Length: 319
Image 1 (cartoon, rainbow, N blue to C red):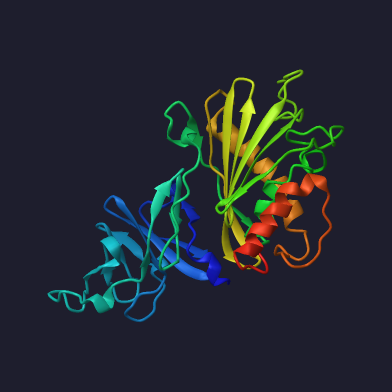
Image 2 (cartoon, rainbow, N blue to C red):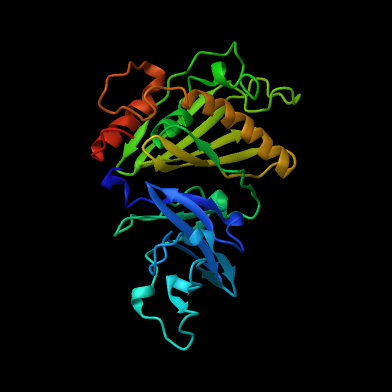
C-alpha cells in the first residue's frame, strides 16, 4: 500500500478487547499482535524473532506474551524477558519484538506504522467531559477501501435513500447548500437540514427544529460527526482502519450528554445504520476510491470533492 499512509494514526482495536490474551489485527497489509503488559499496551509485528511464529497464537502469562512454539516471553516495550531453554540467560536485543507506538483514546487502541508518526488527532473535548456517556460498538469489517467508507460517512445526499428504516424521511431528499473549510489536516463543514436524527418509530419529534451536523474530517481516513440535538450533542467517531487496498475495519465509538437508552440499544441503533451504509459501500465499483478517474459529481457532493482533492495532494492515486 502507499507509503504516504504510514505516518498516520489508525484505530486497530477497542480497548476493552485487549485484556488477558493476545489480539491479532492487520493494518496496511501488516500483521500485528496486541497485548497488555502492566498498564501498557504493546503493539508489535505478529512474528516471534526466534523462528517467526505468530505470537497471536500464544498466551498471556504473568504480564508477558508467551510464544506457543518455544515459550519465549515478551514484556513491556516488546523486550524478551525469558527463554525457557536457557532459563538463566538474559536475552539479548536480538530477541526484542519489532514494536509500534500505542495510544489509548476514545475507547480505542491506535497505532502508526511510520518511522516518524504524525501528531495524534485530538477531537472534540466532549470525549474528555465526564458529563458525556461513552459507548463503543463492535468493529465492523467492510469489503471495501477505507476511502470509500469515509466518503460514504460524509455523504449528506444519501440519507433519504439509504437510512429510511433508521432515521431519515424518504420524502425529504433535497440537500441544502453548505460550505466546506479546508486546511492541511483535512476539512470541516456544518450541514443544516430538517432531516431528524431521532430513530424511526421512536415517537420522538422536533417540529421546526433545524438539525446541525458538524463534520470534522482528518486525513486520511478519520471523520468525526457532532449531531446537535434539541437537548444535547451526539458525537460519532468514524475511524476507518485500512487492512488492505480493498478491505477495512470501521471503529465507531459514540459519546452523548442526554438520555437515549441503554448501551445495548445505542449499539443496536448504530449497527443498523452502519449496516445500511455497508451495503452501499461494498457494492460500489471499484472497491477503492478512484482519485484520478472521473466519477460524476453534483453540488451536494461538495465535501467528497474536497476530500478526494486532499487525498490526491497527499500523493495517492487511490484511497
